[in-house]
Length: 359
Image 1 (cartoon, rainbow, N blue to C red):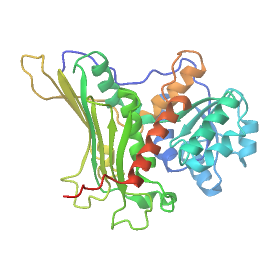
Image 2 (image 1 turned 30 degrees about the horizontal axis):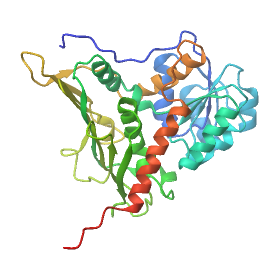
Image 3 (image 1 turned 90 degrees about the vertical axis):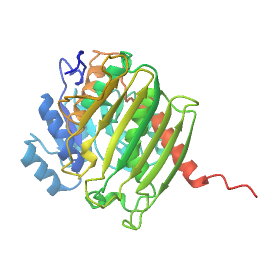
């Protein structure tokens, strides 16, 4: 056991408002609703354009009311309700235009399909004075909360290096809406890591990136493998490396984030990505060089990315809307910078590398 206690959970609101869902797809089934049930947050109504899907979700999760249309959802939702919007990025702006002024909304990532859509979403939120956040929930995973606590307390010293490595076999068929999109891997997956890096290191000076498809998924237009270098000058060095087509069993699959500092290091296995959707166990390991017995140790972490991280994303919005805190970590004003970083990655990928000089 460590000689210190680390935070692992997000703070909950003292008086949580009710939740009304717009969109009842797979992520709501797998993560939103299990998280809200765990945290005691009440879903009072929901709407989905797929009536059969909505009925299944009502029966499974006991949603008190299903609305017949978007206009009915917005018009008849309780006045204090938080709107939990989980729809494809291209549909977000149209929905936000209908939300009454001053309401609280949690928007499933990404913040639109590109930076132009993200700018429009930001404009709408500002114009209508919405209390709006993007659901970049990885920031609130228990193992990330613990790592942030260690780093903020100076236990690993100055952060020199941050690296993500994902080598797994992702079942893309579970998300058929992704196949026709021109952008996929970075926008819908690695964006989590880009956003998390920003939450620790700030917005990078520039980005080098390459995203490519894979022969095993020829119909997935938007890429299945990516390399992203986020440039912060000499320190920290930041890499995001993903390969979603490692179809050779789980033995050599990888899914980790590593923090290296002047006084220690942390490496976290995010098991959700491996053998998805069943996943493998997470693992939190650390080493502190100031200890006389400096060796890698394991910390017991309660909870995981799914569903616990989704508690923190909603709870932070509720606490901000209630006036319990003055900070909203994943506000649309902050999320636009993650979208700008993603846009830079795609632009870098399209430009390509530097040609070799003549010999």
